[in-house]
Image 1 (cartoon, rainbow, N blue to C red):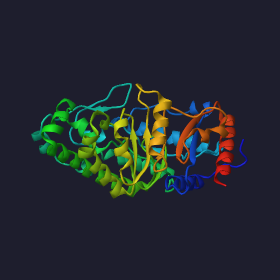
Image 2 (image 1 turned 60 degrees about the horizontal axis):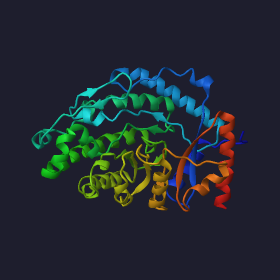
Image 3 (image 1 turned 90 degrees about the vertical axis):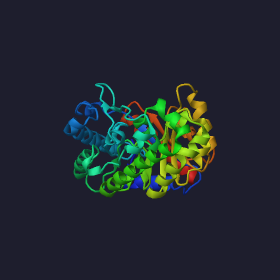
Image 4 (image 1 turned 180 degrees about the vertical axis):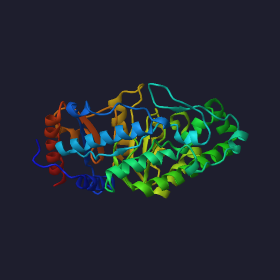
Length: 359
């Protein structure tokens, strides 16, 4: 076991330094492990349905307490967070989409519109009277319990154009992007304005230091979002429909972190050029070799942007892991441990390695 475990304040300070790129290269790490005696006492898992608010609060509060216990045992870089994550449906629902709520997976939105005229008729909803409002009830109660120093994970945040792809039937949307692009951009701008109002209120209530909606890295200011529909369009269409809204969100909130699980190798240059990009996470698509895809990503973005690859982790002894990432890159990675003792030992060796590299 390590002789000392970092406080949450110290971990947050490490994240700030890492994300700001104060040193060339470097890494942050999470060591995942189980505490069966505590995990068995968690309330049952609950899907993010609006009629299950109390169950969601109790499950997520219990999980926050579990993360706090783990943080006292293992000195990695994970920051416990209050979790208000949802499915992808929430912003589309507020515009009027019907929602399908399966019994075994997250809810998802059903398309609402098919034409430019229908898109033009949609109004920006008022957050306080929309289907989004109850999410603040969950957030308020979790934040009340956690106190003002607690860190929150926000709702699922898709890019405005990704939300448009939920509202507008895709079979018609892709045609509309060619034939009536102004109508598509106009709807995306309505979505963006709604998201800005919602997230301004969110960060005003719960603070601007938060754990990203996915994966679990820490942001001090800024916003994070998923940008997946770019895998289905050309790089020119990225610049026509996606770039300006991402730049606007980055400028408004003071930086941006992006998750993309699409096979979007052709968009990496567009992503890299977004002003204020703090971290990007590419999940290797199932059609690609994970190690090759994510190593290519690390080399491509280089020193400019931090990355958190999912689907591949270094192997061998912990001391060798930093050398497996391209020189000068900033990487967040996760590894598994059998139990708390092994996790603590891994964390101690990684701290020693990091300290030696920074001398």
